[in-house]
Image (tube, rainbow over all chains, first blue to last red):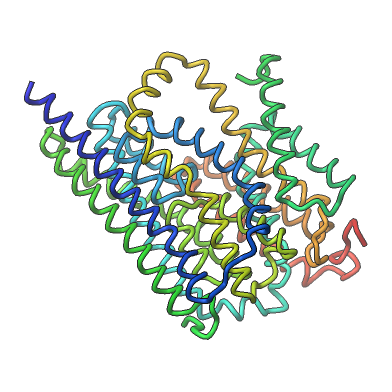
Length: 223
Length: 259
């Protein structure tokens, strides 16, 4: 009885502290654009902001809901609060927590899983923060040279291709059935309207990807 | 080291970076200590907990290098401090790049061109922040409820969670598809990076390097090295672009579909 009560106390305390830190994180997060605008007296035009946000928010916020619902139970309470503050969940925190739980042979819905997941996400966040900080300090003195070098110009001109080729390779390989259609739709749209901005194109390809997945699921080609 | 005269690397920006990064590290330590103490209380061994710290830190090295690559890449337009901040708290590779690209697109620019105006810079910071904050808001408001309810639901319906996984993956694929299509036949607003020979070769190089590296790791049973596949293929493809530009005739390297 006392053991169950202690367990409940721990979980309740994680939820309370998780909320406190998350509210703190939101304040810290918004301090950046507020400080930039106030300090430089640089207030962007609302219509430009809305135009960009209208393109991003439906996608980002809908994905956020899916991520919270999908990842939170896998990460446990402490791991989830920490992951949603420290970011890079799909490409780092979630695989890291799952790998740590597998290595420790604990289940994600057990108290041991909760402990291991929290420690894994915390270690990962600290490691990542330190590596990025050290990297930034090392790179910043040579950044201008890198940017202005004629020889390196092509590397930076086609960086989107390199970045999304690399990020996409594993997704496209694992989910090739649902990848063909949105890429094809994107190419066709650009053939018709080549100057279509990437932000608008995103909508078209995401709708194509989700619709394609649902159709393939109906046809039992994707589970 | 930093160019303080450049508003993108000013003491204000560095102060904000210190505040935000400090917050993340202190929160991580707070939860780690809390979980560690509880782990000891319920009989977990110090070795088990230590192993988790070490293996998770090692696991994070390669993805962190990949995130650093994105910081450096975004730095050509935004300076190094803003991407550093955004990728250290809440953000992620794909979202931050997309948010920056979207705002730059609305401003009539792109990620390959340096932002030289404070108001445009502020606009990008606002869009990146507002776009990404919603997940954190939902976890704060509904985290406890979701953990209780969804755990039950997902364990009940394996089939439903399979489709949810596919739809979640398809949203990411939709994002990637847009950029892939743009690298194949897109046209940039200022003509500086129109699709053509170089963009397609760079894209294909990144994919091929990734797949070869992954296959080699699997064949040689070096599964841990697979984590380096993403940063290696980003830098590898960028190197291919540089080499082709050096050694191929300009008529080939400057070929684009849009003349």
